[in-house]
Image 1 (cartoon, rainbow, N blue to C red):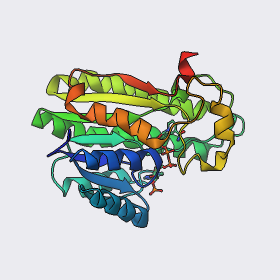
Image 2: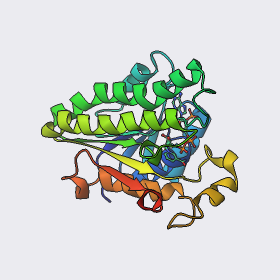
Image 3: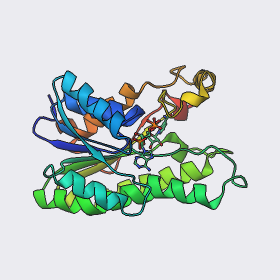
Length: 245
Ligand SMILES: NC(=O)c1ccc[n+]([C@@H]2O[C@H](COP(=O)([O-])OP(=O)(O)OC[C@H]3O[C@@H](n4cnc5c(N)ncnc54)[C@H](OP(=O)(O)O)[C@@H]3O)[C@@H](O)[C@H]2O)c1
């Protein structure tokens, strides 16, 4: 078990990729703080982690709302020091620029950039004071590609990847490793509305299919574990080869 004795806060852990990361961390021995807005689904994830022999606690907050980040930080700190922060909660609007209103712009930037920014601002200095910590930002290959209908989403993730490098520069010297994962299309409750469209979209990729959330979680376990001690400011692309071709 790679994460025994550590405490990991995973945002968006009530669904999809975040849930898979939370469950994988639980199997690796971390105490997992399962963050989301939906208390019932958080309780389900906590129970799933307990069923596989791990331990977890729910921490409920709306990261898009004013005061939501501060509320989550307080709820997390009540359990003790956070050793691993996974900034995973995100939204991915799919629409053209002229069809995007200011409310969508603000909601996307609030959850995808502002929340990770202020969670890191609150928790990274505490990790630095301990002389160790891990921060893992969940980006997207949309940050690396020009697309006609995901410019806002891609820009929010490109911001998160630049922050990954900046935070590596800022907190790395104090023993905090900050890295990112850029998943390709992944089958989750969030992408469920795409149905078979996701299979068609990914059929030409080297892997020929969308990811399952556990395949993204494997990279998060690596970045949180001892094997990634020398990895700083990196983005690991886990996209079935999409950006290789
Ligand atoms: N799925 C993909 O194809 C894909 C590909 C590349 C990157 N990603 C990235 O991976 C991450 C997870 O994606 P996913 O597909 O697993 O998402 P998902 O199934 O839609 O789940 C989203 C999670 O974010 C939480 N969340 C949403 N709004 C929130 C808010 N205002 N405050 C707090 N939590 C909030 C949700 O929790 P509650 O509902 O409990 O609030 C839920 O746990 C996102 O950052 C996404 O951009 C996904």
